Amino acid sequence: MFKARQQPKAAVEYSSSEEDVVEHIGDEAQMDPKQLEEHMLTMYKPMSISDMKRPQCVYVHMEIVGSPHELEMNPSLAKWQIHHAHHDQFKDNLAIHDRHLAKGDELIGSANRIIPIGLRVYNHQNTYPFSVGLRIPGIMDKYLSKAEKYAWVVGSNQAPPSEPMDIFDPTHIVNKYQYENAMVCSSADLDRDLVHMNKERSKIAVGSFPHARLVEHINNRSFTREEMAAMDVRQILNPGQNQEVEVPRSVGDKLEGEIRPFVEDASKGMIDATNWVSTFHRADGQKSWNSHRQLVGSIVTGKAVNATKVNADLLHVVGTCVVSAAIFFVTPEK
View 1: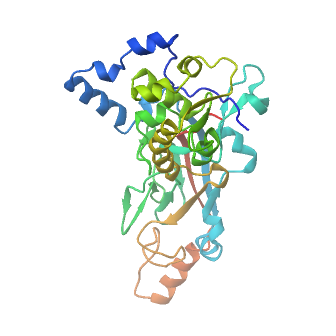
View 2: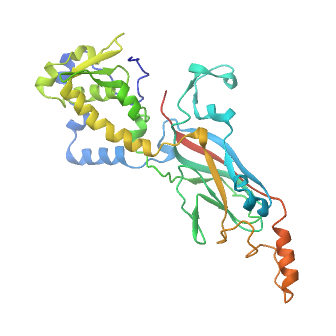
View 3: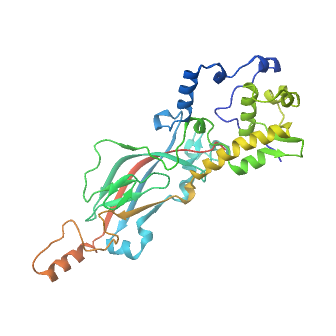
């Protein structure tokens, strides 16, 4: 069953008539080679947070508590997961009044399909006698520490940053084209929104990503005369209350061939925020939380037995590591 969907942010404006389409030439077609090159570089370069029209973000307080010995014996203590009660925080809140009570249609987005694009660290603390590294889903591990890499590292008793620190290095690059189309189409969406009825015809859901691309191609005169003649262009451009439009199978095949690789590539960068798990690790080159080596505050004397005992005591002291940050992300608008 086809269902009209919210129009993607970057869908081109509909032309008012078929004559307008014939007269219209896409912006790209009017550009000289230099302008076209600059346009393509702008559209397909990796984006920064400042490029986003309305980046979404959630503020998180990622924390672990326990002694090094406890962390080694129970690895789950070194993980931080978003509580199920907070999953709606990954949706766009459209409510005007009582926004803290928003639900249903007032919350737009998919918490299980987000793409992290950056991290802004506001504060951190580490009381353990060694450095601690943090790995975060969707964020590149570019912070080098000994033999390992992490998204963020906090030294033992290291002072918090004097100002917020931005990490813009997602594991999946989002370019302007992808962002402006808001990643609104998954492979499942495509299967639902673009259906090949038979060998001759395909149908497309109005307001879907394939529909937006169909309109864009019509305005840019990308189809053959035969394909244009076989479509009800007026209805496609001004669908009114119609929930679907029909196109020749050749047009449907072209749209699917163009969109499916795009959405499959996009899906690689999507993560499920409902199962978001950040992990903390000892980051001083020691693989074990309860290794006696390189402890801050440890002692080294000629009496090895006493030194070993004091160092072992440090591993049974309850510590904490906290990283407070804002996670920036994009998510489908549905």
